[in-house]
Length: 72
Image (cartoon, rainbow, N blue to C red; front, side):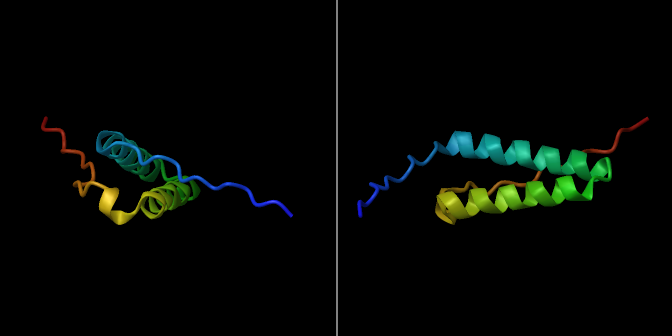
């Protein structure tokens, strides 16, 4: 039986992780606004997997994107 060499994937840069988190946050907001619960659930799972796969120390703590109300 042969053993496969498992190499860890390189950890993406902090800027890449922050951009991916912002993209996921934006997609979550859009999915919620469009009332697509399965889509939102899948995005939450993707965000959890991102956090789990790179470790909490590598994730930059950032405020989730929020929309400002339009003043008319």
